[in-house]
Amino acid sequence: MLMLEPLSLKQVVLMGAEPVCDPMLLRILTSLKKSKDCSFVLLTNGRKFPPLSKVDEIIFSIKAITPALHKDYTGVDNRMILRNFSEIAASKSVSLHVETVFIPGYVDEDEVLRIADYVASIDPAIPFRIDAYLPIQGLPWRAPQAHEIQSLADKARRMLPNTSCLYGDGGKTELAYQVERIF
Image 1 (cartoon, one colour):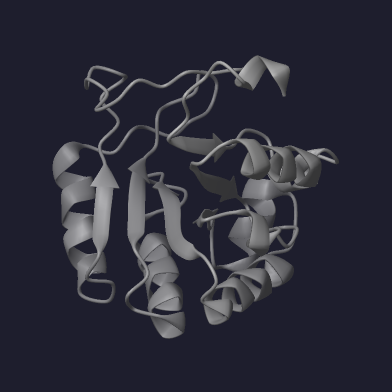
Image 2: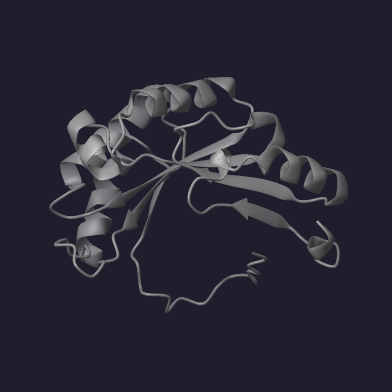
């Protein structure tokens, strides 16, 4: 924690791999909460239940609703993930947001709308973000075009009014604030 002492933190985003599986997560959060007056955001895939009392916001990444697609995409069943999501939403103890990645031809428009419908069935006020897939060499899927993702966001907005999207401009957009990666 010594490396964090000189930093003036406004928000700490815990992400990468799966932060909830880090055996040091609780110790890190407890120490940071004592020493820093900032908010804590956790980006999670939901496989493991997060420490709700230690974070201010959860961005829950739902990969797919269709069980076979989720298993193909992640290698795991999604029943516990969806159960964890509904429990977090019911707790009302943290600010909860949902994100998913639109992958034309894989996690397609119909699947993204299934995710939106599921989230709306839990709470239609939950913010929902649709991220554009960024192509990875060796994989067959393409990036969605701006008009495709905008159209999809418009359709999702019928169920979840607080829907937004990221077009994936390859890092060309200027950041609104400084981001410092500390490790």
